[in-house]
Length: 398
Image 1: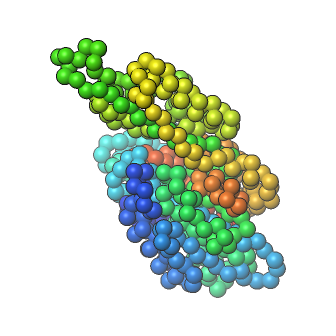
Image 2: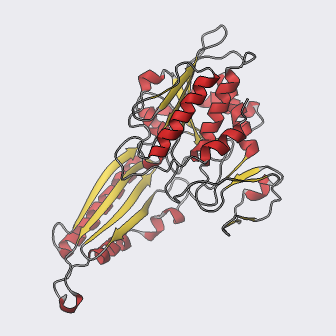
Image 3: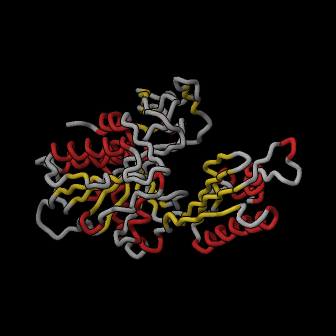
């Protein structure tokens, strides 16, 4: 029987970075590779209906065991990883962390985080320093896969129907786009996509993407007076007109932000890509109005059509749906407590597939997966956290 650590180490070495520019699903071939592997492993362990659909989603179910009327519970994790640091993952194992700064292979140092002292003495999995680790969310994938194997054993406790799914392209906001809620067959579900063990989240941001395109006029700089319109500089003006105190690095808790995720350009054409976030739906609408007002101001200054803004809603705060089903949250809280973990209910400063799925008829709060520092070279996960979450998931099901 494969353990959760072994699974995690195998899965993270398959590069599954998603790509927003690619409109196919999944957006990158590595995700399909992982999907086929997971479906095969599920079939091999006895999940008869394990399958990969035409869009790269993995589905499977374990029939109920024992007497009694129990709900069909879903468990979901995403296969893709963030493109914040591209590259193949080379995980490194620290058998017994000494509590001191961790120097990775390429000289990156993991230090200065409040949680580090609490991990002393534990086995850690870290990156080589060349890419993200992929605990977001292959920790969740490995935990669900390990749980499935456990629940298929002859001595497994009685449980209701277990529905599992692994989604592509969550990191680019498309993980729930083609999710088959009716075919999934769950009464409710949990995404296993959070951070430190004990996190239970049912409030998330309302989210939108914002693409700013600036059209300029390129003229030889020797004769540019009153003729050149430098798109790159106008793009910088746009960025400078947004409030700097409302960036991610200056916000916390329920505070929203404008986050510049990418930029490119030259004199003739420039582009800025933002994500807009706020827990309050009305305040997100105000943020949209702000970027449109800045575009209008710059068009008045440089000519109509110079700056265009394309806004796309990504997901909504799932609190409105999930709080209608308090029994789902109580089930998760009890499962944590049964395994010696104090549940911590907190707002997600991000989003999960569960946010979209909740509005598609599948109430779906988010559970911890056990990792820290996602979306960066300093990402890590303690092996005991992986193991603990398998136990917590089992307690949720029985």
